[in-house]
Length: 377
Image (tube, one colour):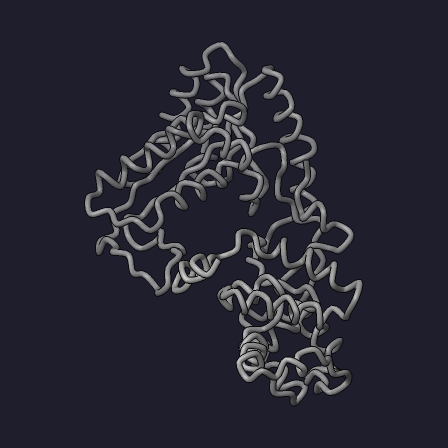
């Protein structure tokens, strides 16, 4: 027995697998005999005694790192009796007590981007000095999260968008899925070989990725098949004009010969000109122009976002390599990436008729429509 104990000396403590599940179960059991605070403290004492890292104990029990240190010091001093006593009513009241509802109301009607901005607002409007960590606790308590904001075209007409979706777009989607017609979403994207594709990278310190010093541009006009997710492209490094759109129509007509083709596209002048309209009519292709300021209705925009995400955090020192990479990502949409693209592009379309104004320049999803979150399917 002594030999086994000696063998274990000097060994690093093993990390518990899934400690949160285990400790929560133990804490719940102990609450049948003691308070929740004391149950957490007892479990922490055991974990400290067997050498579990502080970060794991904090995650598993919900006790702060500072409290873990206090428990450890008390254990070393042999002051265990103090650990079994839970004080009541000795803590200081929260700084925001009495102002919390007013602070939350201010957050709901204004746009704050950082916790420091919120702390400054609380100081200016309520005369309360709060640390950034205290602000974080206040936000968590009231279920307020830092969420990425979406863009809402200022001139978008939500009623017109909804009508186009329900009377034109959705029926075409349903017929395309039944194989009665070919539905394509057409749009051009301009990929600049520079610093446009920097993203987030996990690491202990901030990372810097090389970027190309020039501004060479790869223009891609794409037509995305709603059902198969295959993309037909016309590309160059100069400009997209009506000539490129006409070339695209010729390719589409050849690819889907004998099938009724419907194309959703925006109102760019090089797409809505008479030359393009006349050629489409000659080829038997039906063009459907989305309402002005409605990029959310052209689902190929989601594909361009996907391509740009794939380009991030890599340095391209040759323009041809940059172009080949873009082509390979687009070519893969109906192959290896089809499952992902199917999730991105379906019958659900972002509409803005469920939004309510927060202030003059921003809107939020109405609570009654939180489940829909602005998506119509």
